[in-house]
Image (cartoon, rainbow, N blue to C red):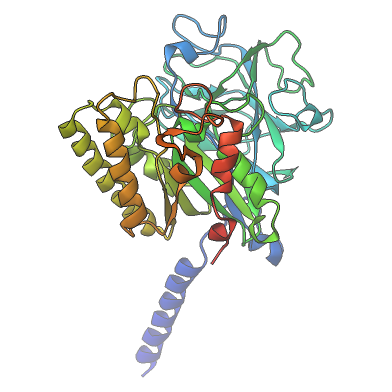
Length: 434
């Protein structure tokens, strides 16, 4: 009888331990035991830039790129615009494409002077040192990323943030991870100037390097909508330091209504990116897990990509029929893989490119493919909702072309007004939490 009771007690203790393991994971906000309101919060990705291998013409300008190393004894100051705000932040640095380990000597965050994007100066008294596992320095292994420790630092929604990094040794390789299409000015200067309020004489460059994400600790209702896209989402044709890409303008709209102010917008796009094949960055199929599924608090996904697949495939009926079928199969993969993570997926129709060189072919084979893809997006029922971007910006008198007032001169990319119309074509009610 005693043995039976002991056995029953042991089983109860073991069962409780299992339940505890399932129900009580370790905290990841670095806060330890805090009050209940704080413990209910979660990390939300509030800014992102798709990591890619830096092309030779997008490397840091001389003298910051050497024969065998880059950013040696260099301070790199960058500004990024967050979406949702918070009072604790952490950063992610990527060495996804580096040819050697990435040693970061010192990293600081601050508010930029005047709250502006693309400035080299910071507001005095706002600089804070970022740590990694309690240390000021860290090394990011080849192919990896590193997440900083949480830092008490208040950011308002839509605020610009300055991130300054110093690399004493630089990176001992010319394979560098970056996001060239920043549409934002960064600054380079030799020596450690991470705490300097200004960088007089610094070299400007319109690229982001190394930094891939900013996260904030936010209330439970805060979620993120991510966008998988190409140069039309990366913002070619938008204003440098203007933050007027269509995802930026969508965020601005969402901030105007109480029901959508809690939504972060995560832009995971790159110029030249394709769905099916690597090009400027990994294909969308290859990067879906890294750029969407692995990010904090993403509950909705907008897929707006495929025009580069059509435009780079041979302009023959057979080639365009093949790329059409392959794109449709890829979109189905996006839906299946995102739904498995509880993420709703919205399909955006592809924009016209009539008049563009080299995408527009005289025989119209690529236009036929675009129309076939858009018909599937609109009618298949596979997406949770459809965003008809094509209808929003095409010329009613010539649906093969964009409205002349909305493109940036190449009949493919939009100007800021065109991007405003894309943002307006996303129903705010669609993004409200259900």
